[in-house]
Image 1 (cartoon, helix red, strand yellow):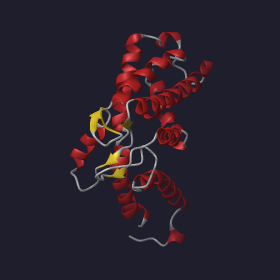
Image 2: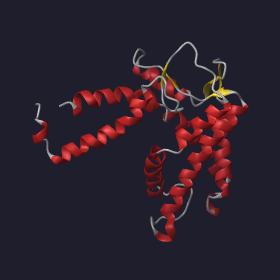
Image 3: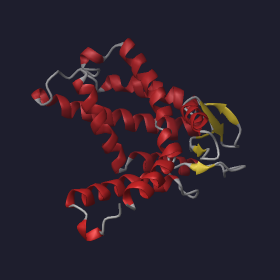
Image 4: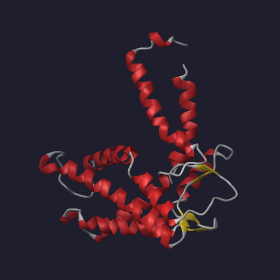
Length: 226
């Protein structure tokens, strides 16, 4: 039932504003001119090859934005509750365990983006921009396609290739984490697990630009316009 704006409860209005904020990255993902590497672009016959400076800009725009912190906070909270590596202690605030974990989480994200989306992407001449399939394809094929981009990429010339930049970049990030992880977490098996979860996580993160615009349109139709 439609409710006049003036009669909408204050809590509902607040929720709607938060939903609008959440739709911002999805709206960018629909823009075929977006330069953010995580901003999806509808499939085209060819994309202009990105220059090294453009790849640096991709790294900057992907890393230095509020969404980086917005994703790091729940990730750090979940790993602290689960007592996963890096092991800073079971208590949140004793010895600043949670703040150290949050810093390590942000460090992992920045190094992963730097190695994968700039340094190695430039060295291997890979294009790290995610190309969206869009709603003309089935849901599950789109999910599989998005996740597979963790190990499948395009060269700067537009040809399919193994995603060396992401796979090796995730390994380099996992190795670098030993420089700031506590002694208890500086182990080969932990680095190997970090490497694997980094690769899988990079594929899962593609679900936002692939499916996000569709979810945004659904929310706008069924929630915000009621």
